Length: 497
Image 1 (cartoon, rainbow, N blue to C red):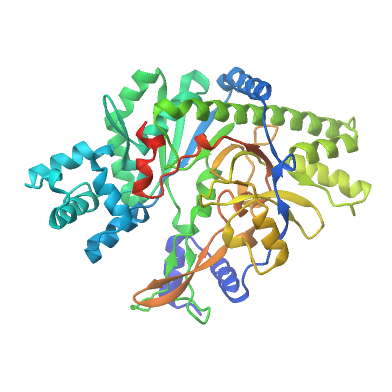
Image 2 (cartoon, rainbow, N blue to C red):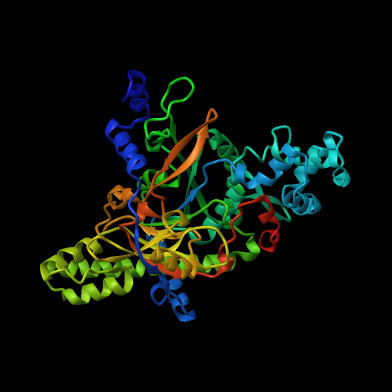
């Protein structure tokens, strides 16, 4: 199956042949269909915190954070090309579409307008004449391409999102500000880890060098910012129509990035007591950060409280002092897991220890507002147990009545708002790959050199990659979720401050 140069490529990437064969088997056999029991809802998998609980958990976090190493983990890889889809279509077709028309109409509302205007005027283009077709085309071209802002080729983290009196802030800078407001740990240190693409690393480094001291001075903190890249060993092989390795026009087998599930390797290397995970494009100006900070702290306080209770139960189990049913009740009430009714006493005792000794995540969930994204559901395992999972729409087969019913009954979705504990009670890191469900990836159709191919995505970072974590879902207000999926989203009131 593999030629000598194929083996050399595998060796270079750090991928073993057995793993590639396993991936090819997924192309041939598909992924198992999940047994989706029901959607998670308020009081059935999703907690709603009242004012007293919010205040209590926030206080727990504020009291304990100085004793914790805290890291804010921000997936920030990839170019923002899809964010400008409508603008690229306009440049290609010369036909004005609705989204591009709105961009032109409200051009001076964007945080990047000052820089754009300077570029335009330097090239003899007046933004005031944007109603003229030829000028409109030049303006959009200046936003997208390297002769202008080059936003069509930059990552979202380096785009100017919000305007302040002292200038504009990129999404990257907004995460520095957020981190300073809730992710301060020992010694007022703010650890932030961004995952970036190799071609964009230098841009992030330059921006950090430029703004770091100002943020440290303004927020009276010490910033420690790390950057990492997706490992070549997490790339997945592409397949042709016959489910054999896809070969490009030069006869070489093709590997593609494995999706955000590949970042499990990066997360696995983070040394921290508490890890906040949030996507690069989900930020708001300072004027709207208050609710975000409150809920981030409250969810982290809940995680700390649960950590303490888990440790107490494990200690009792090890000393023989624990009441087994009490531990079972605690798990089923608090950790997103329901035991199979078929378990015997000894099996249940063993299972209790296993469940308590797992990574823990507390995840914010937002009421459905028509936004794209995964959602919270109860999934049934082969042994009859139930667990809370974050599922993407691609994991549903809506031709199955039970899938359709669960999907239609969903009340919340996942805004990628996670607080994680990845160490055991003795401070030893969990090997995170052992808690991933490899059967939860998915296959999509792409193309290369004009030929169709099948691409395999690894289990998503907050989906199947965390399938065997202890999971707590908490309702958070929609104001804490303001992603920028298209350039027009920057015109929403939440991003205009």
